[in-house]
Amino acid sequence: MLKQNRAFMLFVKTFSIAAAVMLLAGGIGWLAVNNAVRPPDIPVIAAGGAVFDVGDDEGYDVDGELDDELLPPQLAQFEERKPMFFTFLIFGLTEGLNANTIMVAAYDAEAQQGYIISIPRDTLVDVQRNSRKIVSAYPVGRLHGGGHEGGVERMKYEVSTLIGFRPDFYVRVDYEAFIRMVDAVGGVEIYIPFRMYYHDPFQDLRIDLQAGLQTLDGEDALRFARYRTGTPGISPTISDYQRIEHQQQVLAAVASQLLTPASILQIPEFVGIFNDHVYSDLAMGELLWFANQAINIGGTEALHTYTLPMLGTSGAPYWYELADEEGILELINRTINPLVRDITAEDLRIVQ
Image (cartoon, rainbow, N blue to C red):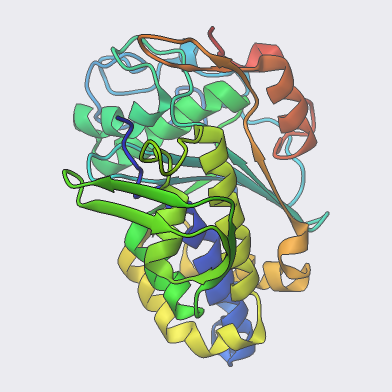
C-alpha cells in the first residue's frame, strides 16, 4: 500500500513564510534594516562544482568533488545570465530524509513574474545507485559524508540533470511549519472533490475529509495535501500528479492569505516559524527583499505553477516516472531558464 507523504506540504510555507515575513517587514517599520534588505548575489559555479567530503559515490570522485563529465555543460563555467533572475530548489523531507516534495522556482524581477515547477518524486535520474528515483538524492548526498550540505548539493546536481542548470539557492522545510502557518492565517478555503478517507495505524495516520468547499486548519490542510491512497469502497486512490495539483491548490490558498494587510499582525509568529522549521542559504535580508517584491507585483496573480512534463511510467517493478525531454525544454525555456540562451537537449541528462 502506498505511503502518504507528510512532508509534501513543506514547500508551501517556503514561499509563504518568506512572502509573509517580507511583506510584513515592509509594513511595520523595518526601515531600520533597509541597508540589509537587498537581492542576493548569484553564486558562480566554477569547473568541478562545489566540494564536499561525500565519499566515493557515483557522481563524485574520490576527493568528494562532483565529476566534471556528469555536469551539464553550463555548470562547468559561468555563462551570461538574464539580469535580476533568481532560481531556487525547494524541498521537504520525510522522517526518513527522502525529499518527497521537490520543486524548482524562479523569480524574474524585471518581468515581475514568479514560477514554480513541481518534480514528481519518482522521476528517473541518470545515476547508478539501486534507487534511481530523484527522491533518494538528499539521503545519498547526506549519507556519503556530506551531511546536510552534501545532501543539498546532491539534490541540486540531480535536479540540474532534468532542467539543464543548477538552482542558485535552496530552501528546505518541515511539515510542522506548514501546519503552523495555515493556523496563523486562520485556515485556508479549499474545495475537496470527493470524500478522502484513509486510515493507517502503522503510520498513525487518519485522513477523513468530506467533499465540498470548506475552510481547513493546518492539520486538515496537511491531510488534504498528503492524500493519495484511499480506502477501497469509500474513497478513490489518486495519482501522484493529482496530489501535486492538490499541493499547488493549497500553495495558492496559503499565499493568497499571506499577501494581505491582515498578515502584518502575524509577523512575530511568521518569523518564529521560519527560524524553527526552515533551512536556507538565503539571509533574512535577502528573503525580505523577495517578500517585498511579492507585494509589489500584486500577490499570487504573478505566480505560475507547473509540473515537470513526463511521458508516463516504466511500470513494474520500479515504477519510475519517465521525463519528457521535449516537453521539459519547452517549459523550462518559457519559465525558469536563467540563461540568456535556450537550454538544449545537450544540457540535460535524461534517461528512459
